[in-house]
Image (cartoon, rainbow, N blue to C red; front, side, top):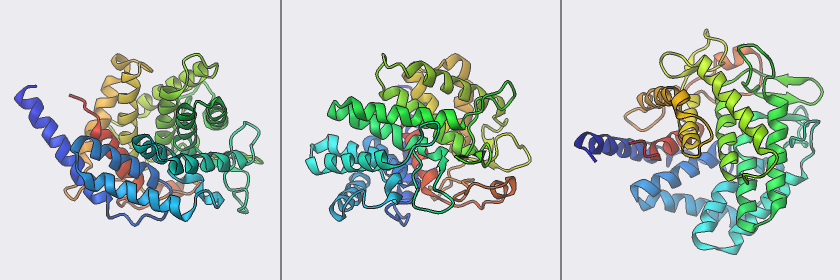
Length: 343
């Protein structure tokens, strides 16, 4: 490794440590949306920095969750199932696997919409028939990983049916500039709703890549998911700002630039290149520009800048006026991105 490469690697790891340290102070709600990916990012930070405090934090939080009881309410559809399985793979503790099975059973209990996507909050008025694009990074990768660990194809089918349902409901099907992008939500009685939200498309690209990495090559759903990923990546390339970021509503340049889609895209594309899921010659510059822009957004205190607050489905003004702060849905992906060795 050259001197320049060593220096760049040291800077990357130093930045990663700052981000991880800043992430430890988040008041985890057990569970709020984005907290699972923050734990995943902390595990990645431990894997490359070897700082035990990151692993210890994640382990303690997940074990305390299991002890208190798992899958006791519908709000746990955002619980960190993938992260439980990562911890199980380290030590083989049966209570961790059993907890993951309970989360999978909770997912299977939710009603299906017309497209076969799970509606996670049938208990809440106004949300009973609603789905959100965010779930694409939570459900299918977890269920496929569980299926691989247990050698149970029913979990694989459960996960693939879920992500296919989400993609069919939410992805734009047209011959326009918006083709391939994902809507924020879908409501059974009124159709797609919300906007073509940047972070939502980040959850979609990460979920599609991770699902394709985990699924069997021979599965009949593979071709459709590859095609949907390809259309999404092409759409993101068309709408990327010259800064390397994207506007918070992808197709509305009057909305502010936001950082989470850049982080998620850089991470997902790097994984897709490694897994031969897409062409680095066609999308390498897009990935590098997104990665560079994301790194510029990391502040001295380790917080990722230009991360919008939790964003409910609404009109354009809702998305365009969300305030910035440090949130786990920014910290987690940037840790995953920085943990990748790109040299």
